[in-house]
Length: 132
Image (cartoon, rainbow, N blue to C red; front, side, top):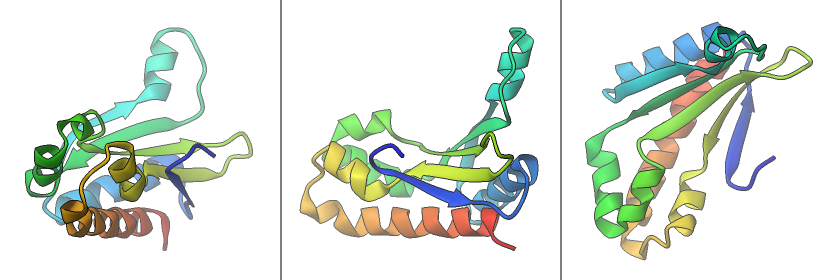
């Protein structure tokens, strides 16, 4: 898998996994900015793509301090999670590891607590979406 990417196998199908993810993100007080259905876009272009959706979400209190430290991290914020189905029919949830993002953007040490909080929140929503 790609460097810095966390992948969790889901106990649910793609639609249910994404619905669970979106509901848990909202329940935790985060904003959902977009839900992008790549498979629907492919179908509209006459192409076939297995279920593939991205949820873009976040909270200004979590992301702003990181952008204050290194504005380039704004290219990776808000947070994104990908729900996709592989060729064997297994559903996966993938997201960028916040520690990897911190290294990518050379965030200073004083952002470590914020990165830890974001990582914990991502783990929690990903687990809620993928586990029974």
